[in-house]
Image (cartoon, rainbow, N blue to C red):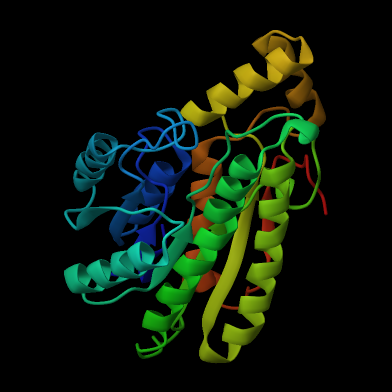
Amino acid sequence: MYPDLNGKVAIVTGAGRPGGLGAAIARKLAEDGVKVMLHDLGTTKGAMAPGHGIGTNDDLEAVATELRALHPDIATYAADMRVEAEVEAMVAATVERFGRLDILVNNAGVGYLFGPFVEQTQEKWDTVLDVNLRGAFFAMKHAIRQMLTQDEQSGWGRGRVVSIGSRGSKSGSALTSSYIASKHGLVGLTRSVAIEMGPQQINVNMVCPNHVTTGLGAWQNEYMASMRGQTIEEYLEAMRGRIPLGRVGTPEDTANACAFLCSGQARYITGEAMNVSGGEEMH
Protein backbone atom coordinates (compact mmCIF):
# COMPACT_ATOMS: atom_id res chain seq x y z
CA MET A 1 0.00 0.00 0.00
CA TYR A 2 1.13 3.54 -0.76
CA PRO A 3 -0.52 6.01 1.65
CA ASP A 4 0.68 9.03 -0.34
CA LEU A 5 -1.58 8.00 -3.23
CA ASN A 6 -4.70 8.46 -1.13
CA GLY A 7 -6.84 11.23 -2.62
CA LYS A 8 -4.89 11.45 -5.89
CA VAL A 9 -6.78 11.51 -9.21
CA ALA A 10 -5.89 9.26 -12.13
CA ILE A 11 -6.95 8.52 -15.69
CA VAL A 12 -6.36 4.92 -16.78
CA THR A 13 -6.89 4.49 -20.50
CA GLY A 14 -7.93 1.18 -22.01
CA ALA A 15 -9.40 0.08 -18.69
CA GLY A 16 -12.82 -1.08 -19.84
CA ARG A 17 -12.34 -4.84 -20.20
CA PRO A 18 -13.20 -6.91 -17.12
CA GLY A 19 -10.13 -8.96 -16.20
CA GLY A 20 -7.92 -6.80 -18.40
CA LEU A 21 -4.63 -5.10 -17.69
CA GLY A 22 -6.14 -1.62 -17.44
CA ALA A 23 -8.82 -2.81 -15.03
CA ALA A 24 -6.16 -4.39 -12.81
CA ILE A 25 -4.12 -1.18 -12.79
CA ALA A 26 -7.21 0.86 -11.92
CA ARG A 27 -8.11 -1.60 -9.16
CA LYS A 28 -4.68 -1.34 -7.58
CA LEU A 29 -4.82 2.46 -7.64
CA ALA A 30 -8.34 2.44 -6.19
CA GLU A 31 -7.15 0.17 -3.37
CA ASP A 32 -4.62 2.88 -2.53
CA GLY A 33 -7.33 5.54 -2.37
CA VAL A 34 -6.98 7.01 -5.87
CA LYS A 35 -10.01 8.49 -7.62
CA VAL A 36 -10.06 6.95 -11.08
CA MET A 37 -11.47 7.90 -14.47
CA LEU A 38 -11.75 4.65 -16.43
CA HIS A 39 -11.45 5.02 -20.20
CA ASP A 40 -12.09 2.80 -23.19
CA LEU A 41 -13.38 3.12 -26.75
CA GLY A 42 -16.93 2.20 -25.74
CA THR A 43 -18.17 0.82 -29.07
CA THR A 44 -16.74 -1.54 -31.68
CA LYS A 45 -15.65 0.04 -34.96
CA GLY A 46 -15.38 -2.68 -37.57
CA ALA A 47 -12.36 -4.90 -38.15
CA MET A 48 -9.95 -2.33 -36.74
CA ALA A 49 -11.71 -2.24 -33.34
CA PRO A 50 -13.44 -5.61 -32.83
CA GLY A 51 -15.15 -6.92 -29.73
CA HIS A 52 -12.10 -8.89 -28.52
CA GLY A 53 -9.94 -5.78 -28.71
CA ILE A 54 -11.91 -3.02 -26.98
CA GLY A 55 -14.00 -2.34 -23.91
CA THR A 56 -17.64 -1.49 -24.58
CA ASN A 57 -19.68 0.98 -22.57
CA ASP A 58 -21.25 -1.96 -20.73
CA ASP A 59 -17.79 -3.37 -20.03
CA LEU A 60 -16.66 0.00 -18.68
CA GLU A 61 -19.60 0.17 -16.32
CA ALA A 62 -18.98 -3.41 -15.16
CA VAL A 63 -15.39 -2.53 -14.23
CA ALA A 64 -16.55 0.70 -12.54
CA THR A 65 -19.15 -1.18 -10.50
CA GLU A 66 -16.52 -3.62 -9.27
CA LEU A 67 -14.09 -0.84 -8.34
CA ARG A 68 -16.73 1.23 -6.53
CA ALA A 69 -16.77 -1.51 -3.90
CA LEU A 70 -13.19 -0.40 -3.16
CA HIS A 71 -13.56 3.35 -3.71
CA PRO A 72 -16.69 5.41 -4.38
CA ASP A 73 -14.99 7.91 -6.70
CA ILE A 74 -14.82 5.92 -9.93
CA ALA A 75 -16.08 7.39 -13.20
CA THR A 76 -16.06 6.28 -16.84
CA TYR A 77 -15.38 8.00 -20.15
CA ALA A 78 -15.52 6.67 -23.71
CA ALA A 79 -13.18 8.26 -26.24
CA ASP A 80 -11.23 7.43 -29.38
CA MET A 81 -7.55 7.85 -28.56
CA ARG A 82 -6.86 8.69 -32.21
CA VAL A 83 -8.88 11.91 -31.97
CA GLU A 84 -7.15 14.69 -30.05
CA ALA A 85 -10.34 16.60 -29.27
CA GLU A 86 -11.83 13.52 -27.59
CA VAL A 87 -8.72 12.95 -25.50
CA GLU A 88 -8.61 16.61 -24.50
CA ALA A 89 -12.29 16.42 -23.52
CA MET A 90 -11.59 13.34 -21.38
CA VAL A 91 -8.95 15.23 -19.40
CA ALA A 92 -11.33 18.17 -18.98
CA ALA A 93 -14.13 15.86 -17.82
CA THR A 94 -11.81 14.29 -15.25
CA VAL A 95 -10.87 17.68 -13.83
CA GLU A 96 -14.51 18.77 -13.80
CA ARG A 97 -15.49 15.60 -11.92
CA PHE A 98 -12.58 15.34 -9.47
CA GLY A 99 -11.04 18.82 -9.38
CA ARG A 100 -7.55 17.92 -10.57
CA LEU A 101 -5.44 15.30 -12.34
CA ASP A 102 -2.34 13.77 -10.75
CA ILE A 103 -1.72 10.53 -12.64
CA LEU A 104 -2.05 9.36 -16.23
CA VAL A 105 -1.68 5.67 -17.05
CA ASN A 106 -1.41 5.22 -20.81
CA ASN A 107 -2.67 1.66 -21.18
CA ALA A 108 -4.93 1.86 -24.26
CA GLY A 109 -3.42 -0.02 -27.16
CA VAL A 110 -4.05 -2.21 -30.17
CA GLY A 111 -2.50 -5.64 -29.67
CA TYR A 112 -4.50 -7.71 -32.12
CA LEU A 113 -3.78 -6.51 -35.69
CA PHE A 114 -1.03 -9.06 -36.20
CA GLY A 115 0.14 -10.82 -39.34
CA PRO A 116 3.04 -11.35 -41.77
CA PHE A 117 4.94 -8.15 -42.53
CA VAL A 118 4.45 -8.34 -46.30
CA GLU A 119 0.70 -8.64 -45.78
CA GLN A 120 0.50 -5.60 -43.50
CA THR A 121 -1.99 -3.05 -44.84
CA GLN A 122 -1.79 0.69 -44.42
CA GLU A 123 -5.09 0.65 -42.53
CA LYS A 124 -3.77 -1.83 -39.98
CA TRP A 125 -0.42 -0.04 -39.67
CA ASP A 126 -2.07 3.34 -39.20
CA THR A 127 -4.55 2.01 -36.64
CA VAL A 128 -1.83 0.48 -34.47
CA LEU A 129 0.48 3.49 -34.61
CA ASP A 130 -2.40 5.95 -34.18
CA VAL A 131 -3.70 4.31 -31.01
CA ASN A 132 -0.51 3.05 -29.43
CA LEU A 133 1.74 6.03 -30.10
CA ARG A 134 -0.26 9.04 -31.30
CA GLY A 135 -2.97 8.39 -28.71
CA ALA A 136 -0.35 8.18 -25.98
CA PHE A 137 1.07 11.50 -27.19
CA PHE A 138 -2.36 13.15 -27.06
CA ALA A 139 -3.01 11.85 -23.56
CA MET A 140 0.43 12.91 -22.29
CA LYS A 141 0.10 16.35 -23.85
CA HIS A 142 -3.25 17.22 -22.32
CA ALA A 143 -2.65 15.49 -18.96
CA ILE A 144 0.67 17.28 -18.51
CA ARG A 145 -0.87 20.61 -19.49
CA GLN A 146 -3.28 20.14 -16.61
CA MET A 147 -0.58 18.97 -14.19
CA LEU A 148 1.47 22.09 -14.94
CA THR A 149 -1.38 24.26 -13.63
CA GLN A 150 -1.27 22.51 -10.25
CA ASP A 151 1.02 23.11 -7.30
CA GLU A 152 3.79 20.69 -6.46
CA GLN A 153 2.86 18.36 -3.60
CA SER A 154 5.53 18.01 -0.93
CA GLY A 155 7.35 14.69 -1.12
CA TRP A 156 5.50 13.59 -4.22
CA GLY A 157 5.87 16.11 -7.02
CA ARG A 158 3.45 17.61 -9.52
CA GLY A 159 2.36 14.58 -11.54
CA ARG A 160 3.01 11.08 -12.81
CA VAL A 161 2.74 9.59 -16.30
CA VAL A 162 3.12 5.82 -16.65
CA SER A 163 2.78 4.31 -20.11
CA ILE A 164 2.32 0.59 -20.64
CA GLY A 165 4.88 -0.74 -23.04
CA SER A 166 5.80 -4.34 -23.69
CA ARG A 167 8.71 -6.71 -23.97
CA GLY A 168 8.21 -5.59 -27.56
CA SER A 169 9.33 -2.10 -26.53
CA LYS A 170 12.91 -3.40 -26.59
CA SER A 171 12.94 -6.55 -28.74
CA GLY A 172 11.47 -7.55 -32.06
CA SER A 173 9.20 -10.48 -32.83
CA ALA A 174 7.62 -11.99 -35.91
CA LEU A 175 4.08 -11.11 -37.03
CA THR A 176 3.89 -7.96 -34.88
CA SER A 177 5.84 -5.33 -36.86
CA SER A 178 3.46 -2.40 -36.35
CA TYR A 179 2.94 -3.22 -32.67
CA ILE A 180 6.70 -3.47 -32.07
CA ALA A 181 7.33 -0.20 -33.91
CA SER A 182 4.72 1.59 -31.80
CA LYS A 183 6.09 0.28 -28.51
CA HIS A 184 9.69 1.12 -29.44
CA GLY A 185 8.46 4.61 -30.29
CA LEU A 186 6.79 4.91 -26.91
CA VAL A 187 10.16 4.39 -25.21
CA GLY A 188 11.61 7.35 -27.11
CA LEU A 189 8.59 9.50 -26.34
CA THR A 190 8.79 8.63 -22.65
CA ARG A 191 12.48 9.44 -22.41
CA SER A 192 12.14 12.75 -24.22
CA VAL A 193 9.14 13.96 -22.24
CA ALA A 194 10.80 12.86 -18.98
CA ILE A 195 13.80 15.09 -19.71
CA GLU A 196 11.58 18.05 -20.52
CA MET A 197 9.24 17.60 -17.57
CA GLY A 198 11.86 16.74 -14.94
CA PRO A 199 12.39 20.37 -13.90
CA GLN A 200 8.61 20.65 -13.48
CA GLN A 201 8.61 17.66 -11.07
CA ILE A 202 6.48 15.50 -13.36
CA ASN A 203 7.81 11.94 -13.55
CA VAL A 204 7.35 10.09 -16.85
CA ASN A 205 8.02 6.34 -16.99
CA MET A 206 6.97 3.08 -18.62
CA VAL A 207 6.21 -0.44 -17.48
CA CYS A 208 7.19 -3.14 -19.98
CA PRO A 209 5.44 -6.45 -19.25
CA ASN A 210 5.89 -9.63 -21.20
CA HIS A 211 2.85 -11.64 -22.25
CA VAL A 212 -0.15 -11.40 -19.93
CA THR A 213 -3.03 -13.81 -20.54
CA THR A 214 -6.00 -11.49 -20.21
CA GLY A 215 -9.02 -11.83 -22.50
CA LEU A 216 -7.01 -10.22 -25.29
CA GLY A 217 -4.00 -12.27 -24.26
CA ALA A 218 -6.00 -15.47 -24.73
CA TRP A 219 -6.80 -14.37 -28.28
CA GLN A 220 -3.10 -13.67 -28.86
CA ASN A 221 -2.22 -17.16 -27.57
CA GLU A 222 -4.67 -18.77 -29.97
CA TYR A 223 -3.49 -16.69 -32.92
CA MET A 224 0.23 -17.17 -32.35
CA ALA A 225 -0.10 -20.89 -31.64
CA SER A 226 -2.06 -21.34 -34.85
CA MET A 227 0.49 -19.40 -36.91
CA ARG A 228 3.29 -21.58 -35.49
CA GLY A 229 1.44 -24.86 -35.95
CA GLN A 230 1.32 -25.46 -32.19
CA THR A 231 -1.36 -26.17 -29.66
CA ILE A 232 -2.00 -23.37 -27.20
CA GLU A 233 -0.38 -25.37 -24.43
CA GLU A 234 2.71 -26.02 -26.59
CA TYR A 235 2.94 -22.32 -27.31
CA LEU A 236 2.62 -21.40 -23.63
CA GLU A 237 5.09 -24.08 -22.55
CA ALA A 238 7.69 -22.69 -24.95
CA MET A 239 7.00 -19.21 -23.56
CA ARG A 240 7.42 -20.36 -19.97
CA GLY A 241 10.70 -21.97 -20.97
CA ARG A 242 12.08 -18.57 -22.00
CA ILE A 243 11.16 -16.92 -18.71
CA PRO A 244 13.65 -17.42 -15.84
CA LEU A 245 10.89 -17.21 -13.22
CA GLY A 246 8.99 -19.93 -15.08
CA ARG A 247 5.56 -18.36 -15.59
CA VAL A 248 3.80 -15.81 -17.74
CA GLY A 249 2.85 -12.48 -16.24
CA THR A 250 -0.38 -11.60 -14.48
CA PRO A 251 -2.28 -8.30 -14.63
CA GLU A 252 -1.40 -7.76 -10.98
CA ASP A 253 2.35 -7.91 -11.74
CA THR A 254 2.01 -4.89 -14.00
CA ALA A 255 -0.48 -3.14 -11.71
CA ASN A 256 1.92 -3.38 -8.77
CA ALA A 257 4.73 -1.82 -10.80
CA CYS A 258 2.44 1.01 -11.91
CA ALA A 259 1.40 1.79 -8.35
CA PHE A 260 5.03 1.91 -7.26
CA LEU A 261 5.95 4.33 -10.06
CA CYS A 262 3.00 6.53 -9.09
CA SER A 263 4.00 6.59 -5.43
CA GLY A 264 6.33 8.90 -3.59
CA GLN A 265 8.81 6.03 -3.28
CA ALA A 266 9.52 6.49 -7.01
CA ARG A 267 10.07 10.26 -6.72
CA TYR A 268 13.63 9.96 -8.07
CA ILE A 269 12.75 7.67 -11.02
CA THR A 270 11.96 9.17 -14.40
CA GLY A 271 12.59 8.31 -18.03
CA GLU A 272 12.70 4.58 -17.26
CA ALA A 273 11.14 1.65 -19.09
CA MET A 274 10.84 -0.89 -16.27
CA ASN A 275 10.77 -4.54 -17.28
CA VAL A 276 8.12 -6.66 -15.57
CA SER A 277 8.85 -9.85 -17.45
CA GLY A 278 10.02 -12.52 -15.04
CA GLY A 279 13.53 -12.01 -16.39
CA GLU A 280 12.61 -12.70 -20.01
CA GLU A 281 13.74 -9.24 -21.08
CA MET A 282 16.98 -7.95 -19.58
CA HIS A 283 17.88 -4.83 -21.55
